[in-house]
Amino acid sequence: MKKQIQQIIDAVKESQRILIVGHVSPDGDCFGSMFALGMELERQGKYVRTSAGDGLTDKSNFMRDYLNCCAAKDLDEEDFDLVIAVDTADDYRVGSILEPIFKKQPLKISIDHHMTNPGFSDINWVEERSATGELIYELLKEMDAPITVKTANALYAAIMTDTGNFIYSNTTPETLCLAAELVSIGAEVQMLAEEIYNKRSLGATKLMGAAIDTIKLYHDGKIAIMYADYAMIEGCGAVPADCESLINFAREIDTVEIAMLVREINQTRYKVSLRSKKYADVAVLAGFFGGGGHHFAAGCTLDGTMEEVMEKMLMKAEELI
Ligand code: 5GP
Ligand code: MN
Image (cartoon, rainbow, N blue to C red; front, top):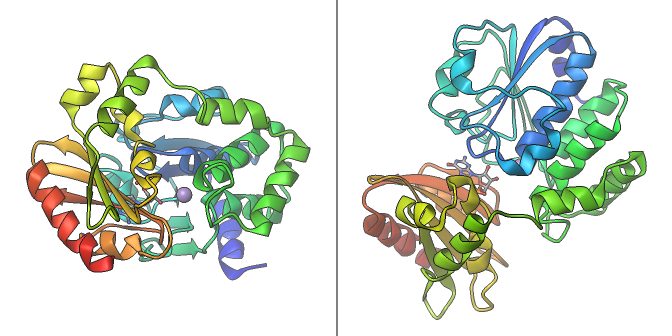
């Protein structure tokens, strides 16, 4: 057994009250990993709380009855023996409300697949895999946990999300074998694809159009920038979480190598999502601005006006082209 897995199993054995946290704007890998692990720890008789910064999005609706997920502010008064951060590349990624709660816990564990993870916990299991869900599946097997249909759904959702429905370059033979195991246990492939990919509100649909309208190409069409601000989101009747996959429209343009989506956090702070296709390492680009992620998908947050942030990102991206 891997050293970190043994350490995690030992830490869990010695704990009664366990908090599982994920990153802000939790995606399928984040909430799927949190829920799969949380359900097993609850089965082991632990008191379990899960929380991800600004709450879950509609894409996790299929799991709402699996386990409770509470708002970070409601955790304030609670004490835990152990906190486990999943799919969280850096401590600030848990968000400003959870960060102080995370930091004051007596024992911290990270289970993550971002190679830019600096190892901010006491026990850090950081390994390159398609999704954190793959690591959670390995951990559950080592714990001899029963893999139920609910667990299989949560883990399949995790792996499906981070592989872009099994089409990104991180889709390895092992990934497909794990997914096949989950399907044979009962993971509901069609339901999960419907929930995560093929369903959106009218507002989210209109936001796609509005965001596509903002796309501009630079550097012989190799760099694309698009944006979404609150005025657009509200005008379309969408919610901020609907921005999650907008970047793909810029990424999918045939000439584009680096795609960037700039999202308003407030009028002087912007979140940038980065994607690349063949060679540019956007984890390096994000890292330059204090962010991180993977080679082909990364993110960072910058201060300034929307125009300043776009300008800074564009200048640095041009160096990678
Ligand atoms: P997204 O653009 O979908 O929000 O994020 C793409 C990838 O980059 C994800 O794996 C995400 O966890 C990571 N990421 C996004 N923003 C940040 C950030 O500010 N810091 C770090 N370290 N990773 C980030
Ligand atoms: Mn992930």
